[in-house]
Picture 1 (cartoon, helix red, strand yellow):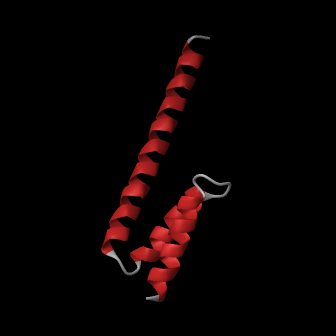
Picture 2 (cartoon, helix red, strand yellow):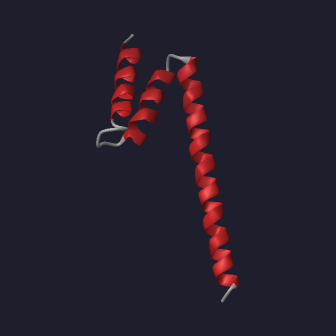
Length: 75
């Protein structure tokens, strides 16, 4: 019960931080990680969030490498 209350509170604080100043992108995964100790749905959401962030980072690195290759080949 304590895990559910703490995890939900941290998650809700993260959601509020989306529209207010604060580290929402840190608090939301932390809240999901706490909730994933007890709940399978939170574990699934956390997994999906991690995959999404990983895919975005990979795409950004690929885009950056392609821009670098174009810049080097045009010199």
